[in-house]
Image: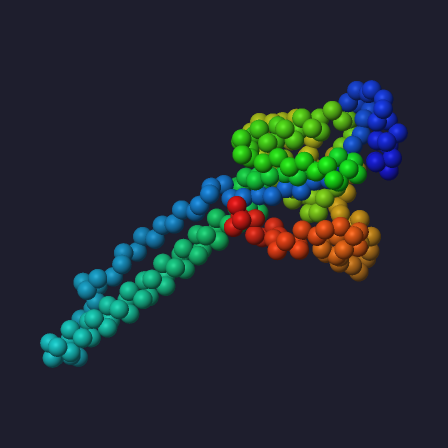
Length: 230
């Protein structure tokens, strides 16, 4: 309906209050920093940390026992350090899924049904500038509908990052509070599956095959690999 509406009025000059557009949108995200900070305050064991063994009397056996015990203490220390490092990395990576902790790497979008003319903006020249460019592309339109996969995730990221940079007009455009945006979002998976009661599932890869278009999954990358590729 939106595409037909736009086609009807595309040759007419209108102000923002009576023009409409459909934006197909995808957003990729990253943690706040390029690497994670790792702190492990437990000192590496030394011979001074090895307890006394009162059962041994022979100095040679005592020395051998202390060396073995120290190796065991160091091994445990290294395991604990590795666990702490893994936990720190996990927390860092999780920022890619948290819109008030991470940052947007890039945004790809197409207007109406002109999917071959996809525009991608990234944060090469600044995340704020990327968001401003996106808003400049959509602000002439009075009615904006967004189409995408996991669209609430993408729009929430744009909303929070826009607030962070004080881009309030953009934040207002993508806000999703109850009752405000009921007609503004089209979730691709709901559209493809008909949102039927028994939760019929269809993957993005299968949607591409259904429509006869190249699947991004064929290139061996998905959202979980974005950080490592970056």
